[in-house]
Length: 472
Image (cartoon, rainbow, N blue to C red):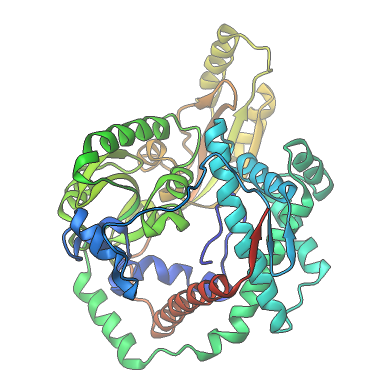
């Protein structure tokens, strides 16, 4: 499995991928490894209509007849929450605790229907996770308790908690440290298996690297879009119904109760559902005309749709934009001090407004970062420092403000009554240089990693095909 469900703290990333993250920003779409999406890939296929659907059903020598009769029925209300995978048991408790972990990490509220859907998705993930652990053992991969403890402590740190406190937090949310430790074991085991059994057999030639460099040069200045997509198929007789369903889904997304990736994993019919609908960095020329037109008019952070595409509708989310090999002011790295005042749980709106007004007046007296701690102490505010923030990584509405600030200046107050009001004080800024072409080693490393990912996906499909799975 290329990526696990995003829980905000667990990502399937090898050491090599970490080393090539910077190179990946420049290689993106220009590497010409075109991102596959349902709407995109199927645009190049035969007509996306009912006849095309029937034709696709017959692909792979299945020879499924068009006029068929179903013998028996499947009851959609029967939810099988447990399974035995090659003699290893996944219990309902395993499913419930992992689902609770995802809900807690993403801070989302689910309806009963969505919760059932999530549990089924989690069961599939647990099956894949178990298959990966079993396969890693065949290569004598051993993940020690110390390694799991270290990773667990890092996860707890991401939640700003000590490991013991984090265990208590998980229990309160209906999960357990056992569940997350199992996920950590699965990810570490699979990474190590790939490094032993797949990476050594992946090679990239010099001519391939030179070709990538030439294409990067040719693409310099071309605008790229980091898009996410949810695709819903619709036959001609269901267009109106699917259109209405898509509009309803957009309304749910815009409420902000869950990240876009959550909806993509649970509702999208595209092949990218497994990575939260992430199309990665693409150029408009790589996209179907309707999606390209919508993307061209979108603002960063915007969700649009329904966008009609061959065979159905798409919902798009634009995470970011950039130009290939061109310096972007938003890539400047900031040294910041964040000043925050919080409110008691029983505070009234009038009291919160008065406190915010006092905070706004106080931060106007800030004269550089050297004065921040003293001023914060006067009003009982918390100060947090960070020296590695890119302007690009801030919320879009803050990016426009920060780009105009000089070192020593502060943003206007922002926040909410529930999460507190805060300001960012600029302590330093490292402006980006004109992007240079990545080195040969960087390009080679990323291409190798992409091929490792493809082979890893194939290896998991083989495990799924050969597994003996009994649902209970």
